[in-house]
Length: 102
Image (tube, rainbow, N blue to C red; front, side, top):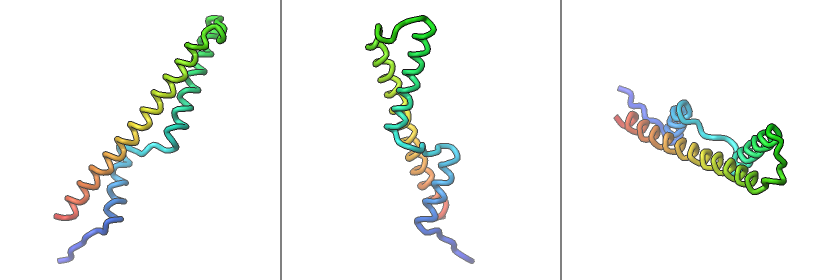
């Protein structure tokens, strides 16, 4: 009877492949993602202001608030996705270890 055991790197690669299917790791950086979210929120504010004929100078505080909120939502969401991906990889690694040690 042949006993096949996987080395540590092979187990981790298998766990990463399994986790990638349902919890892919986010790419890029959280800071850049947040900046993109802030810009999209600001563009939304500019669009709404243009539609209603409002001048942006009349509500700079509101525009800054919308931009900061957009940044924070995307930044926190990006961090959460990264945390969920790491948890999925850890869970899959534990499952691979159980399967291979039988």
